[in-house]
Image 1 (cartoon, rainbow, N blue to C red):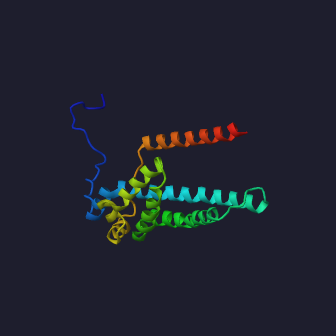
Image 2: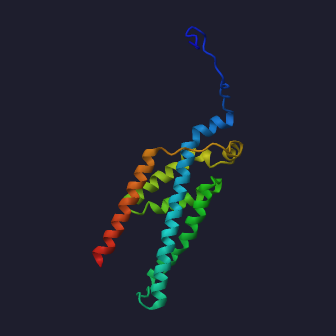
Image 3: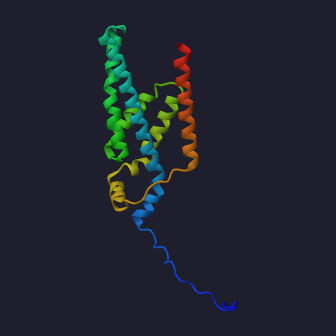
Length: 186
């Protein structure tokens, strides 16, 4: 027998005790989830801007080709108002992704306009307004929090697996809905 069963086990490596988080890291840890929600809200503004751009290009191509009906009076004004909101959505997306303090103004305006959309648009807009103007939202979009983010660059929010699953299901339903709409009208 080469091993003594009664000998005290030896440890080849001992991990150093974890260093306590700094005050800035603790504050950021408490706000990471809200930060991720605001950034996700910005992503939805980006998607709105991208979809709006596609619609604007499509409508413009129809007008200039002569296939589409030319807008009359107030329709024309409404279309240009809609097209004017597209850059605002991209601007808002960029500000929220970077957690810039000024971004709560255009995000609040766009969310306020979203209250006019019935159904899911109203619910999302109410949630967005809450995210922006609750205590955590005001703090995350403040210059003081920007300093904390600069001090803790390695901290990132880990999205739970179930969020990815729900997102995948929503995308799948949208693809099925668009496919059905395309083939049902053909």
